[in-house]
Length: 544
Image (cartoon, rainbow, N blue to C red):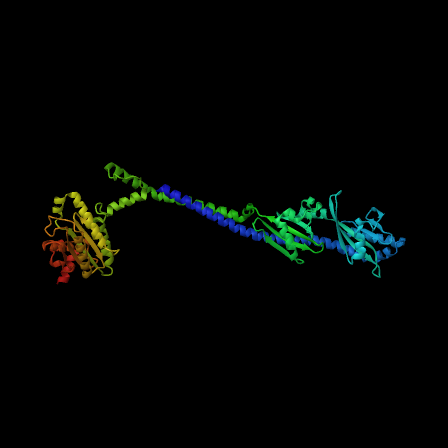
């Protein structure tokens, strides 16, 4: 029994652990997905603002430089030395204000390209590589961008080109600055500590910035690098508005993506996060879950130890009972399996309350239960009926057919009597030998008569042959019954004696019949010493 209980407890603990773990992982997955969504959208917004603010700051400085009256006069009069000196001093000041500390300018009169401390050189506008110059002067009103990759230096530059106009709004030259995007994005990535992957790309879907700078150098397409996720991003940029972010999760649930536009550069930023099972467990909730499972495990261990302590006396009792059964040879001959403690104890209790031959209750159960019934019914002054039953001429039956047939007759009679009792509170017991009793709480005289008539009829219908019976050619029974209003002074033996007196009358009058004797008038048939003192006093008072 103890081993089965331990196995059951272990299985129950295992089920709790499995169910709890699955529920915990699903809950943490939902929490993690919600957190990732918020984090990715925040990363997209922050990194976009970082890049936009940096580029917009540079643009503002270059625009201010292009609109400087001194620089405009210098571009209009390139041969004026004093004007050139003041203009160069102002350009140097703007250079210091720029993040890249770099500036270039071209006067459209002499077409000489100046930049920082590098020697100037003549610019050929007709050269296709210098397409940005005529585009800036003749096709741009405010500014434009020019992005190129220098394979020798392995850097990507963003050039901000601003045309310079005279008072008549005629282009007289251009100024600009360059931003080393590779260095800028590298700095950005150094400050970026998130687990998600960050990408910048242009309207053609070409990666312009990533942790792996080779992707930008080779202009790798985003869908080629990210697969279906990249294709989904490129399809989603058509739905983007300025300052709007889009978030979605892949259908397989393995990755999450957020992306947004960078209007200042006509670029886009995308953040991709790949889910890992470990991410669900790297939280304080995991510690709480583990602590909870440890507490449950400890509770199960303590509970099993407690139950084991409770079962120890039972185990010792069963051990003693089994030893007695072994020494007295009480074990059934056809026993094929070993019983556990509960089955053995149940068998022991069954032996104390059940008649081993007939299977119905025995006299010990009847005496004990009848006392409880009398105590209970006395509180409400309810009625109690009792039948005493005897198989007619049973000694002659044993002598004629043998004791084995006599046992079968007793079993058949007990089974028939038990089948006639249908209420849960009623019961049949073997009183001793061929004598039986039927206890009927809350039953009056008419009710007990109906039960008795039913018992007589069913026994007759069994038609068990009995050739040496003085009552009939088959087995019959004689019944004596009594009914009384229960009083706390009554005892079980009082009802048994009254019913037994009625049974005596049935036998005296020819057997195979039922005789009723009122419990109240039993005083007229029984001598005073045969009744309990309390009952005699009660009947005596009633008789007077």
